[in-house]
Amino acid sequence: MTKDNIRKALATDVIDLINDTVSVRKNSSYYLRIKELSNELGDSIYIKVLPGELSDEQIIKMVSEGTIKYSVIDNHKASIHKSYFPNIDINTPVSLSQRIAWAVRKTSPELLEIINKGLATIKRKPDYNMIYDKYFNNRRQFHKRLDSEYYTGKTGKFSEYDEIVKKYSKDLGWDWIFVKSLIYQESMFKSSNTAWTGASGLMQLMPSTAKEMGINDIYDPEQNIRGGTKYLKRMYSYWDQIPDSIQRIKFAIASYNCGYGHIKDAQKLAIERGQDSLNWDNGVDYFVLNLSKPEFYNDPVVNYGYARGYEPYNYVKDIFDRYKNYKTIASQ
Image (cartoon, rainbow, N blue to C red; front, side, top):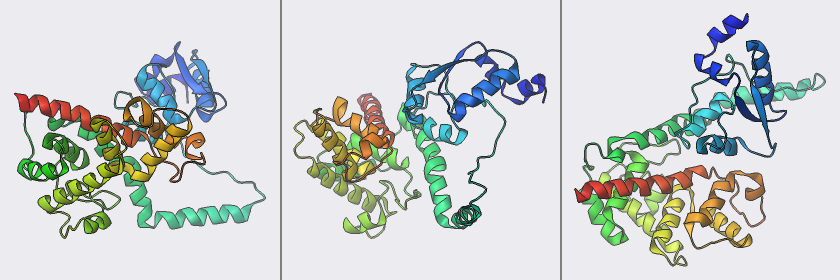
């Protein structure tokens, strides 16, 4: 293709990269792509080399916070991270669509055959679509929750389940408006919602959890809220060593989101490294965020391994932010 054709094929916005700085890890495929693009366009794109140990998540976070202006990441990864960093712009392609392939030595035909058969088998199983929904479709739905009328308070509407929420929040001992914020985060007040994991209903209970909480019909709004608040009460009881009630609630809802074990792992990391283990804010939240990094999830004190830490971290933040908006609406 000619340079003019390349410019036309790529998004017009890519021209903004010319004579600007793009930050990427050296010797990565991204680094090589920017070098190629600079040659293809016949102009200079300056590259800032980042440390090789930085993960894609860390680099995207740097873009979100304004530490760096541009970076490059695979499109499918960008789609995932967009839900955790909604302020980033992922609409500028820096190459035409390309296939991704595994490479094996020519002397390893048996390995190649096994890989191809394995991939073909996986694509025929339900797990393939479940995993795709988890990391793509479900993440996009997660992002949409931040833009709803309930979150912004544009209409002042509350859910149709307010009286039920009030009823079961009393036994939990939490402000019913806060519980409502959590329910919106889980299901956007749609009682028919079912996640890729099988979690269902307003409070997205797993079938096993619903059964344990004495729920017969997981889609029945009252039963689901009764079971969800009962389970929240259990999570809250696990953190009785946390002296501050607000911090304790943050530990509880993070556990509700990703499991008590992962949050306990993060607390143990905080203790091991001499940090505040009794506060979520500027304490354990840091270690939850970092449970996606090998140097953290491979630590001997960690029992439950890898976790995508941005999800519980943002889960807690979004619920409390929405709660503040709900309280403002209620006061009016």
